[in-house]
Amino acid sequence: MTHFTILKQMLRERRRGLIWWSLAVAALATITAASYPAVRDAGEGFEEFMDGLPEGVTQMMGAADGITTPSGYLNSQFFSNVFPILLLIYGIGLAAWSIAGAEREGTLEPLLANPVHRWRLAVERFAGVAILVTVVSLVATVVLVALRSPFELDELSVSNLAAAGVAALLMALLFTALTFAVGAASGSRGAAIAAGAGLATATYVVYGLSALVDVFENLRWTSPWHWLLQPSPLTDGWTFQAIGAPAVVLVPFVVVGVAVFNRRDLT
Image (cartoon, rainbow, N blue to C red):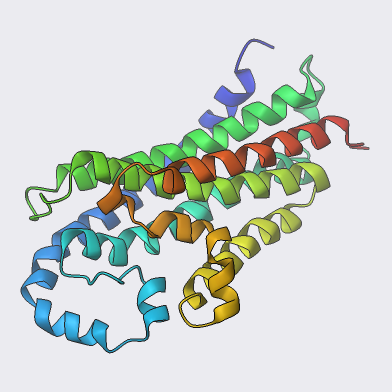
């Protein structure tokens, strides 16, 4: 097989889903940006409401710094919850299908019947997942950058918006890589989804409760949600915590998944 044949095939198979996901995320980013002037104009009422909430709740909402500034608004309404969760759903679903799902469907064996190494198939499948999730993240970021001026979000620099988009992407890819590794190692799509979604949920709970419970406060540094949101890339830009940490952590998941799949008995 020629170079990147498996990757190209996967991208062709998933292009229709990619289009729909991209359109949905673009629409969500547009609606979010367009709503900011109304939220800002009603600022005092919103801020009073947020001040009355427990610290842990505002932290989970990404609203620790309020919601009437451009950075606080986009954090609380987009980057701390809806956007990364959508990327997680998309990425985890793709990763669970890439090896384990295809194996269950019986579409993996025909690929392996070709003169192609298992490790190459696994690497190209994960690369396909990463590319698809990256495109969706890029669409949302480009839309927000384009709408900065029309909806009075000019205070946010293009660099910081790009950093926030990349940080959300890398956090989603971290759990996506775990899903891929478990699926490649076990051949179970259910186990893969449970691992990725379960850890994403658990670390989100740890992050949210860290402002309320001492034991979780001591564990907060382990949560990728903490890396993403404190400090926020929208205000602090390209920090190692938000960008470098998830990038470093996800690589071993991919390596282990590829290595175990390369040696696993598929009979």
